[in-house]
Image (cartoon, rainbow, N blue to C red; front, side, top):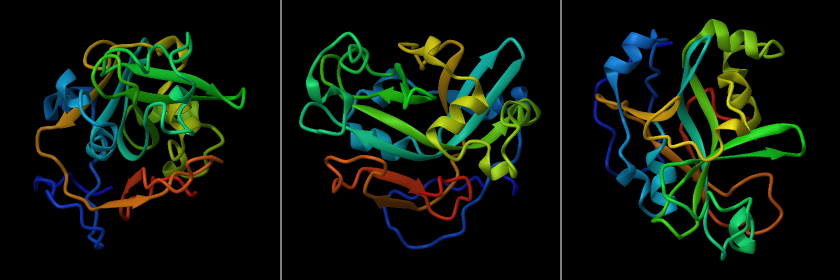
Length: 227
């Protein structure tokens, strides 16, 4: 991996190609020194904005075995009841109560009876909206991540998908409802943010609301999912 660039991320959302700087592997001490926790106000915004702005941020999971972390390189936005692909399309239920709750919390669910998927709740309290984390670039705890992903042939495969990244970081439904502005599962931002271009595409793996351009990823990052 290359060393972390210290240029600010461009304010425009151009899809023109630019080489992507990859952060180096970090120790926990380096990680916490170079990042800061996201405030709840970051999440209390329109879901699509949050989905784009989560790119380049860092998911951190502190376990008994150490600290595991990865930079977000791919996301998908899921809106409220008007978005038929969203779990909240059927309204407020016991399952979706987290999505309708305060922003800055984790919504973790089981997909296909096999894979845990991590979402981050956006929008003001009472309005549904969440962001699916689709892929991470591992940054911290690489030996433990490798142990948790024994079938991954290459490091780029450790967390290049929603189910892969939760396995890599040890995130399960036990974290459903967790406050990600603090605690064992958190989201942090680099103090010197890496620069990159954002690619916008339609979401994948869904059968309804397929034409909405709500998938975002970092152009040129090898850890983005293959789909």
